Image (cartoon, rainbow, N blue to C red; front, side):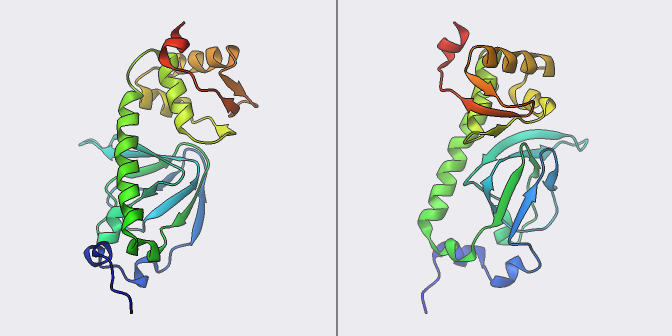
Length: 200
C-alpha cells in the first residue's frame, strides 16, 4: 500500500469526506454555491468564475478573491473546517468534487497554492487604473470565450466602480472591437490590450 503524502496526512482525508455530495454540479450566474460557516467539500471549477467574499460584522459581503477554471475552492474543508468564504457564481459554473486521489500528489497542491497567490494579486489590480482597463482585466480573467458577462453590480463591486461606469466601459470596449458582444450577456471575443493602449 502506498504511503500517504504529507498533505493527505495533514488533511486526514477519508472517502467519507465526500459522502452525500453530487460528483458534479452546475450553478447559475448570481446564485450562491455555499455560505461562510457551512460545511461541505472542496470543489474544482471546470467552467465559469466564482466570487469569494468574507462577511463583515453586519453580514455584508466583502470581496476576498475570484476563482476561475482549474481553481480549487473550499480546501479548508479537507481539514474538517467550515467554509471560510461565501462563494457566489459570477457566471454560469460547472464544478466537480476535488478528486480524493489527487491530494496524494504534492505537485497538485503546490500548483493550487501558486495559482491562488497569483490570482489574489490579479484581483487587487482590478481596482487600480482607468475604468476601461479595470473592466478589461476582469473580463479577460473570466477565461475562454464565449464569456458570460457577470451582473453589473458584481463587476462594479469587484472593480471599485459604479454600475453606470462599468456599463459605459463595456460599451466602449465593444465599440473599439476589444470586447465583441454576442447578445446581451455574452462576449464572443476579448482581445489582449495593455493599459496604455486602452487609454489612448
